[in-house]
Amino acid sequence: MLNAGVPFASAMAFLFASPLLNPVIISLFVILMGWKIAALYFAVTFVGAIAIGLLLDALGFAGQVKSVAAVRSCCDCQQAADSRSRIQRSAAFAFGLFRQLVPYLLLGVGIGTFIHGFVPTEIISRFAGPDNPLAVPVAAIIGVPIYIRAERP
Image 1 (tube, rainbow, N blue to C red):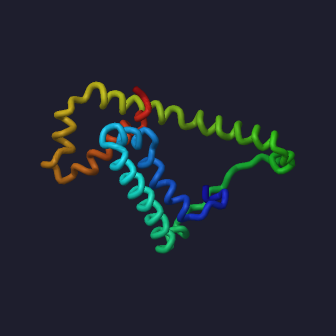
Image 2: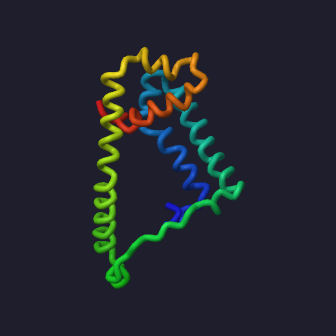
Image 3: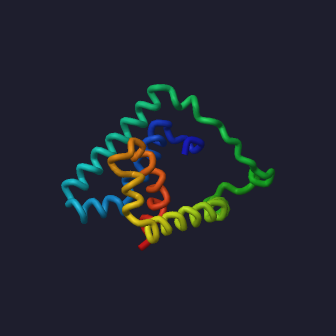
C-alpha cells in the first residue's frame, strides 16, 4: 500500500481496522447483540483505527518502514501500459502471491479447526480465564487461528 502511494496514516488505519471490522464479526454483533451495539462497535473501532493511524504518523513511525525492493525482469520495463497487460500482470502477481500464502493459510485453518473442534472450552477458560494475569495474550494466541477460519462453518 505504501509503495502505491497510500499515506502512512491511512495504511496503518486499514491494518488496524481490517481484522476488527470483518463483515463476519459485524454480522455476529448484529445477530447476537443487536444493531445498536454493532453500530457502536463499528463507530468506536473505525474512529480508533483512524486515531491510531494518525498518532503513529504524528510520532514519526513512517520513517521506521523498511524499504523492500521488488525484483523485476528487464522485459517488465518494456511491456505495454495498456489495461489488458496490466490486468494480466496483476493477475499473475496475485496468483503467485496466493500460491506462496496457501500453505500458511491452510496451517492456520487447520490449527483453528483443531482448537474449535477438539480443545474443550474448560481448557481454554483455564489458560485465558480471569485467574490468569496473561489471559489477554493467551487469548490472542488462541484466537488468531480461529479468526483465520471465521468464515468457515
